[in-house]
Image 1 (cartoon, helix red, strand yellow):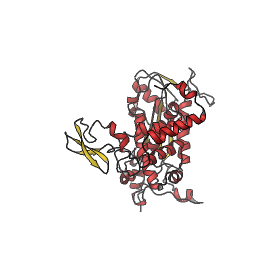
Image 2 (tube, rainbow, N blue to C red):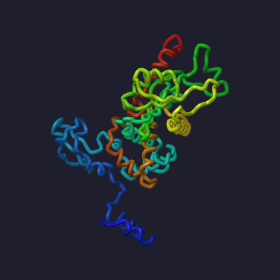
Image 3 (cartoon, helix red, strand yellow):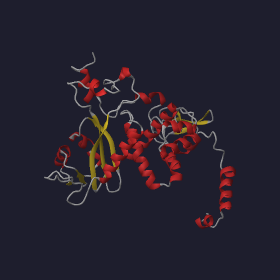
Image 4 (cartoon, rainbow, N blue to C red):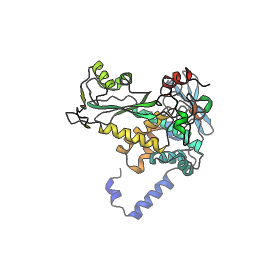
Length: 360
């Protein structure tokens, strides 16, 4: 085995020569390599029923097929992953993931990988869906910072015929035209956030409307029973703590209306507020994010944050590819714009626009 000292003693020209030899002589040509070639070794179960009774079942367009002896169905190594029904090769996917790690826009990504903006958008949603693994089976322990933030409800990409509310008017007199005496302030999307000492995080699009006790109860399964809740003195959070009998350390309310940011024990919500700031910065950078896809952007934000802690910049795209290539993505391109909303939007718009204020 080659020791690290061997590479440290090399001259720059010698290191470059070894790198070129490895890339061009020992490794196969990467151009046109299919994603299935990276996944073939990881196939151990049926993609449909999960049985381990599988056999090789020939090739289709140079792609290895498998047959399940339990359910009788055939599949390939890309079935159910973000590469399924995609003609994009490994090299292009790798370049696209590198663009996502760097935070480029769709137009910049389309120019970089020589694909259309629509293709890049579809690839992005598949990648973000695979990234939801970062919040799967999370259990927060110790001191847990907990709070909610709010974003405007956005319906980008929704056809006018499918809009659940009136389309917003743009222009100089938009407020006077859009608002009526019977209409209240537009509802917002509530984002639940909980973060522990080890940077494990639960970051979810919770509901439409205000902060609720049911929001905290919904994600109580991710919190260890002995965890201490750090938060503000919001009514809904206090009700949740009282019902669950959890230890807590809440930020006090000053009688003279002075701002207080720390608890009596010196704890604060600084890290949770940092996550909220990053999400809102991303929302502004994207000129709004559809509520249909908002959870995917949140999952990618969390995954990217963890990735930057663990891996150096030049290796992040490779680590992301390896981490996410086998994750299940249960939709194909034509279904992306028909995905269900992660929250129930009818609870805030149904009565408002389908009742006495229905479209005339």
